Length: 193
Image (cartoon, rainbow, N blue to C red; front, side):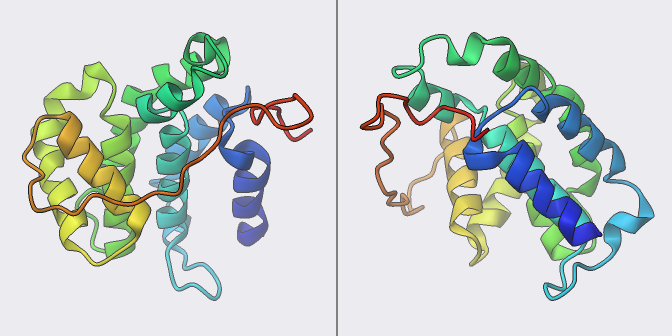
């Protein structure tokens, strides 16, 4: 049941990185269940707590509404960040952060790293600026780990955006993404249904 529910989060609510009308209420629900004891249940075949998966989902969903993504999409979809769907989600970032922050010092490494990445992305919101010095420590820990490239890229970009020295931190090579129109003229921002 948990595996199916987690799959639905990715496939239906965050399909291809799109922020839908359902994204904000689902993100609030996910944030609300993070502290439930069942969230520490290990996922079958992965040996990772469900909580880490939920935190990673919040991180990637918040990233899809981040300034970086908005700046890439805005030229092709003017007003993207100011539309009610994306703006509603972006407005929730301080509330989501309050649900994520307690897990920054969790005893399980996967939970701790997922919470760190989620907090770094959410802290882009100006109301969370006072947390950035504290989060810089978590960003450095993520960079020092030999882990996920997405997580390390988020950590480096957060430090750089907040004015921290990232000299010596190798920039990440990314594949260029084309957010322009498809050959059929629909563009890449069309919902999948």
